[in-house]
Length: 338
Image 1 (spheres, rainbow, N blue to C red):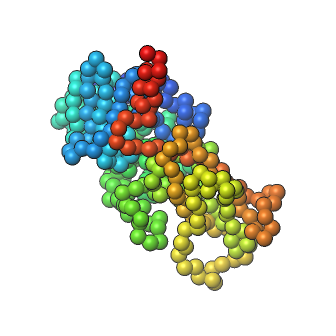
Image 2 (image 1 turned 45 degrees about the horizontal axis):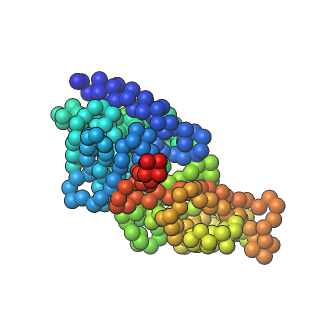
Image 3 (image 1 turned 135 degrees about the horizontal axis):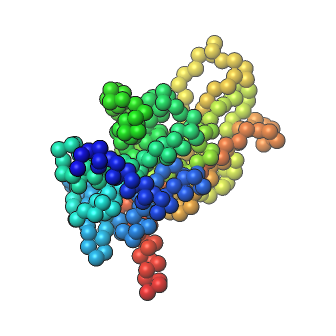
């Protein structure tokens, strides 16, 4: 089968799966930003289990009770992409297979080309890409900024490289643009967001800003979270947790991020700049989205009508060894109903 035919066939199949699993409803109605491959697997009764493995990224097992095995030692984006690849094997009618990679060239087996193409079409359909970019105010030019592309990748739940190749697949950029983007590493992007050495370079760094207020973002519990807000500190305003007791009760800590030295000559009273805040300490037991609410106030005045506010939601995704949250629930429901 020619590569173009594979692209058309897998795109059609992925669209049918997205529709039948109602994967886009949580994006369009609830404010999420990605297609969740674990939920797609659950919609057809496929169990998904994670465990650390030396070489394999994942495997698809076709049997009376088919299932997917994923390497829990990889990043969230790669785990999602691998799960989507294994779903490609399932939906395209392939037999049991194991994968040490999910990126295949034109000389690879047809079944691997199909699974790879299906994976991209499932996780990054054009409609989803347009929704996320519209919410964030990104266009063809600004999405080619490595920082924006990295944040796009996090919201789509894919790797930085996969996000870059997806722009090419949808013909938003050319091959040379992708190569330029890939010269910037996610590690360097993460480090640029900190004024000190990155606490853990294996974790992702999410930047929430005012354009995320309509979205539900899905970091892992131990990812680094930065909230970037317009600041009027020179006029005496500070961003504070809208309800410090509630934030503390939910396990979070909120603190201003260290700032680079500022030249006093550049300050203007009442000037609008931005300020970063670290949100840390999210427990991994949350099953529902958690609200993060801040208000910009003058501390000596307390909260006043008309003070600026910020509200966003984070639905933390624990990815650990064992069955996924969806597969555990399905197993419990099966036992309960037996």
